[in-house]
Length: 133
Length: 167
Image (cartoon, rainbow over all chains, first blue to last red):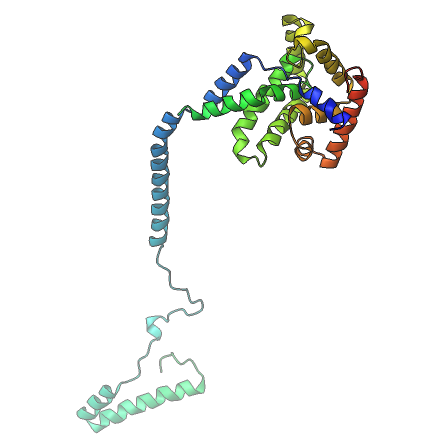
C-alpha cells in the first residue's frame, strides 16, 4: 500500500453524516401515497381484469356486427343499355305460329311467310327496323 | 406484506449517509442536501427495477436532482435561509463527529470545499460511495479514464492540503 492509498484509507475512516429522521419519514409518507397498499391492489386487480375483459367483448361484438351487417352489393349499373320501350319490341313468329298457320290453310302460311319476308327486307335496307311496315 | 417497506429502509439506512454526502457537493447546506437526497432516493426507489446498475443509478439520481435544484434555484434559497435560521454553522458538518479526529474531520471538510467540483465528486463517489471508476464514469457521464484522472488528481491535491495528517 503506497502513501496515497494509506491517505485514502484515513479519509475512509471518516463516516458521512446520517440524514435526519424526518427525511426517512418524508420518504415513507411519499412512498405510501405513491402506491396503494398491497391489500387494496389485490382487491382492485380482479375488477381491473373484469373491466378489461368487458371492454374486449364489446370491441369484438362491434367488429363482428360491422362485418356481418355489410349491405348487399348493388348490381353494377350498365350505362348506355337502356331497355327498349315496349312499342319497339317486335317478336319474330315462332315455329308454333307457322304450324298453326299451316293447319289453318296453306294460304295463311303463305301470308305469314310473305309478311315475314317484308320485315326482313326492310331490316337489310338499313331503314328504321322498328318502324311499322 | 411489509417486506417492500423493509427493503427501502434497509437501502436507506445503508446508503442514506453516502447519498447525503454526495448531495452536499452541490448543496449550500445540510438542509438542502437532505432535500436533494430525499427526492433522489424516491426517484431511485420507484425506478430501481429498471436500473442496470442500481448503485450507480442511485448516485446518478442524486446528481440529476442536484443539477435540477441548482437550475431552479428557488428551493435552494428557501432551504438555505431555513438552514441559517434553524442551525448554527458548526452543525453543518458533512461527517460524523469523532472526538479523537475532530480537527482532521474539519480540515478534510474545508479542503474538500476548496477542491474543484468535479474532483470533489469523484473523491466522494470513490472513497465514501465505494463505487468503481467505471460506475463513477456512469454517474458523472464521463469515461472511466476521465473519472480515474479526476479522482487521482483530487486525491493528490487533498493530500497536499492535508500534509500534516498525511502518511
